Length: 304
Image (cartoon, rainbow, N blue to C red):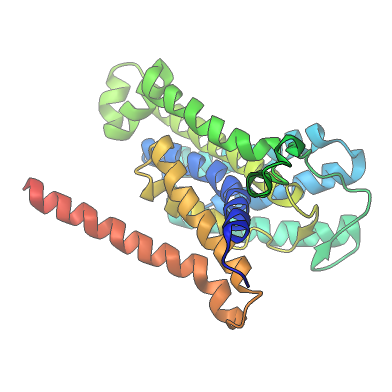
């Protein structure tokens, strides 16, 4: 392995591709945090979107229908979770875990029923997301390698974060979301339908998770594997909290986890044991959260 400019360009490119699906889901997590909802079911919602995208892709061969199917399916699952958590006062942790287990089982079962396969499904008729043409950068090989094979959804992840920043801090809807999170009873006294807003926010997090799931299975090698999300929903949950539930902060935290995953993938081609390289993203999560909590505690002591 040569540690040259081309190598770091490849690492940058891989980090962006690993980061984008996490960023979509992490933005949904951030909005849930803003309304005081602990949505641990993001993993199951992302998995639902990924499976729905592949099913629609297989039967229609249409990228837009695949994306819409992913968004719709994951939104419906999130809506169900939101109703149980808010309307029926279910324990958020229990509901979230139930969603994760249920969707893992359902997608595994449906993969056997629809595709008659186990473990993984790959078909030559599946259509991937369109790539961005970077041929105009061919005179600069390093820059070309940095942005090669990226899709429009990869770039839209950053645009979505900026749009959601303005929604959260520059619109009436954003004010209502933040008010509900700060003091639900006070928000209701102002005429805000807090419970309805919480449910809709969870549903919105499902929509974003569906986009992330679609990007995951159609952004690179277009295929579906059992539990293909592989903990990315939990990484997104951590990214949402590390980013202080702020859309721009979530970009930074998602970039950290995207880099950790890219580094893990690259190290698998080295002499490092696979067990260690696969653990890199999760070890990075633990270390990052420890540092984040330590800084918060220290900041609290300094203020006090």
